[in-house]
Image 1: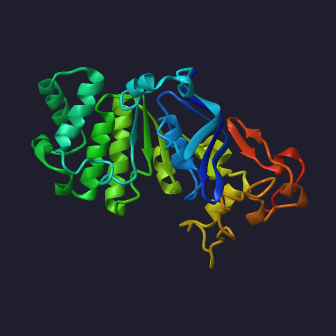
Image 2: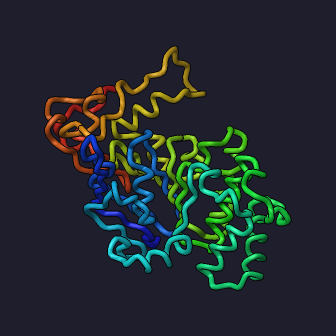
Image 3: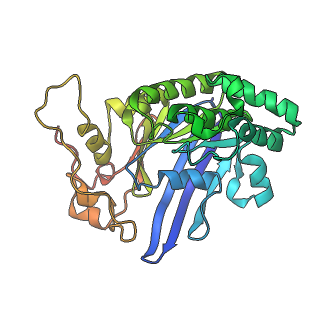
Length: 328
């Protein structure tokens, strides 16, 4: 039996803005087993980054606020811990790689010093030992250790992201959160960074939450997948089940909009419409304005996550018997 490392239950996060209350995450349930990688997939604005920041207790307050739920790490609720306890966990037992490596690195400090700082803070090493650890981590991610004295602007985008990975892994965390770590990189460098993260995860026995909108990345790296739409999880499955038998209309729409090498089609089938305005989310099922299966009941009833297979669940009224199934 695998051990559950992270469990999120009924999480709700709001942002109070001039235009009203934005519900960024609503009734979110998620779990991650030790030693595995979970992909969190969704469009821009779905609430993926807010979920990651909630785990790290970095939701900006104001305007953001975690209003309900629990985030359990090794069974302990992170939302109930004092700020000084969270500081000991953040960067040490749970680390994060951010989207843009240039803005997540301090431009006036050398990359070696920035890694040393994290090691000295959490591992209680002296500067000499921390410096050796920093150079070893740079070498681990494919950067010559003698470049520890260089500044972030002296590295390419891909190399800066490698520095970010080295910094995140420098304290050997149990959980690594990677927030779209390849978004700012070209395709060739993306593949190199993903392969690096995959090999380091296996080598260091680190669990990973990978946030992305790219299903190709999910297929390459992840063990399980959670599909997120407008702040909620609409489908959860292992990678094989999701790719061979997607069950939620939104997930099927995502796959329908991706070109296939195996099928000849004249036109792709994109999902109609746009993500809903977060200050005025639809009633009932949030996906119903864009859903080809939608019925009148979808406007008023909020679907619950229903088991549709071994470890596979979908939040759709089809599986509650209230809406007709798919016409294949």
